[in-house]
Image (tube, rainbow, N blue to C red; front, side):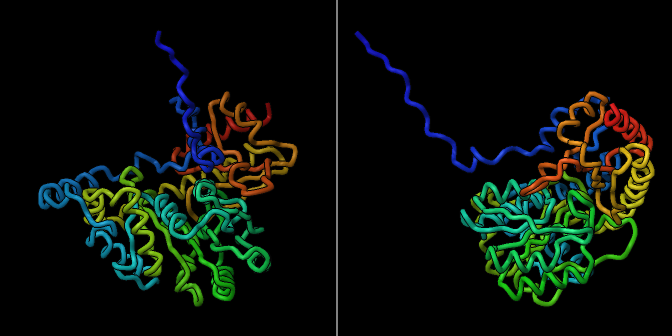
Length: 397
């Protein structure tokens, strides 16, 4: 007689996988994929503006001229042609940079993950803006960090509050999106950036400066990177991306970091994916020659779409709402009267075929439930007007 027994239970998932949830934006996008939906929730570039011919030509040239290189494994640090072209571009924008200062990554989101792997031990304290880019909160949560928000105003982190938190909490790093911040769209002025650099130098603190939107400026003057300010030179990691100015499907980003940290990130990348796809890097290196012209066209269109959303907000949002006018980027941040809970109201908006991202998941602590984020770059001005009409109807329902 054969005796069978129930199989033993499998070991549980890692604690970090059990405690860190998925991206609310990705979940909203999955729910709102219907063609009739006007979706202000995603941070998606406008697909009709992709330079399909220019990018295709770059790939054809690479595959015709150097196929044996384009289809082969590459170095973890990245293709020299792309790093050289990118370094020249960063240098021209005011930050002296050599090719060896850069590590090419599979999107700037990977760059953030590599930094977390190289710098953060479980229990380390990380300071973030309030509100903060929510995928950064995911990364730091998976790393086991203790994430604390720094009080912010219209210009970003408050320097006095930052100094107090640094003294009290002894954080390892400060994470910022100082230019056209996600989700608020605000830009930190130069004086505030200088104060952040000084605080980091005085107290011993890494700065992670995430800049995926910096080239999408529609008006106003460019503000220098924090990495260029005195005191920040040896302690700032600058992250960038080609996703917003070239195409997100290429999955190309980069980080610029001091040598020891950059080497640690390269080791972490070897363990993650060996290297970023060679053919994509080589095609992007070719496309750098015409990128400025493409970005200029994108800026014109996106600026018109920002203006269309700003023009429609007074009639779309309830009396007593407030919002800012971002000088660039992809997002508008609005605060409704306190009685509104944008998380609870999202289902009603989706029923009216319009979507946004509630503000709640962008906060590391004490969320403002009356806030919401709207992406203005994906839809035409006509679609924006209709989407805002639907939003007004849902909020007044």
